[in-house]
Image (cartoon, rainbow, N blue to C red):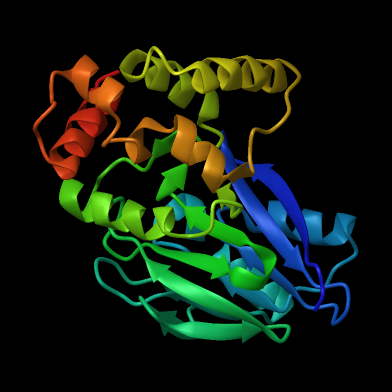
Length: 256
């Protein structure tokens, strides 16, 4: 079994794209295409030929370059089953429970509605790697545009059930802002305090904070810690349901 290589590159104000490459088969996939030129430049820099494009959801900062990149490379495009908005250029629509093979390895599709209703995440179990799109961020989660809080919480629970060693590539560099919010609702969390210092150091050097790991998020990301007693005390929500606490935290973040 081959160990894949992952090439993360930035585009726009805070977006990340990722190239997934198998050195054994020379197959390459690109996760989301908000900027075709940036994707093409990264392919050129790494001397790679593109075979597939994996789209997480319909927002323009993930799809604007799709048709150009497909035309330039002839790549086969996987993306979400249409629910809220058509994505032009998809060759295969996917939803919860679907699987496909990339370079002889399984890719599992997890439907994670909330940010959008069509959002899907791509999970590579043999690589311990998840591409979470705008569902789960380092110390955050996606803003809820098309779904509702319960829907988003149920989506996050799907991701929380993955192995703790899962490496997570999300689509935005929001970590520092998320960190300052996180400490406001979880002020006694020492691991979070320590993590903020590391994040500040990385960002001061212009370095990415992504990828992250699920185990670290479970210990420090308040959106995954709604059952935590200290957070509930801080919010005066001892007896509320997990989804109610999640909804409160999301509302607080929206207005932070």
